Length: 96
Image 1 (cartoon, rainbow, N blue to C red):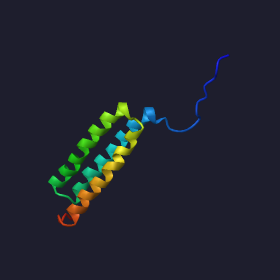
Image 2 (cartoon, helix red, strand yellow):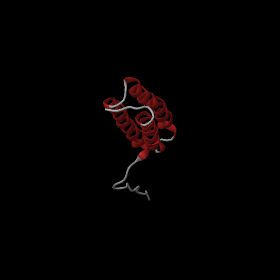
Image 3 (cartoon, rainbow, N blue to C red):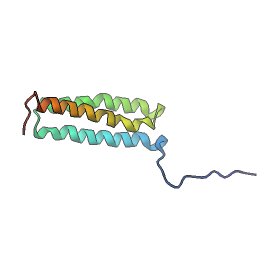
Image 4 (cartoon, rainbow, N blue to C red):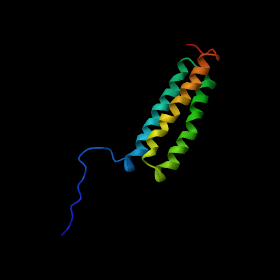
């Protein structure tokens, strides 16, 4: 007798979609980094973009080994961008 395998009707299959969700999150962070050009100097925008470079490498290395954990990489980058922005606006004196 052959067993039937049930498919889940809903839910995410993060083994396949996890890295793509992470790439989408990195694009959101890139948009946030570029949008700092409203109040940050050019080198501040470059600094924000440079923070994303290791995150891209992190997602690329985890895409095959830990695809479900990839989704949390952009969440780790968000506080870093917020910290650079807070330091730039506060002591750095960035303003619009």
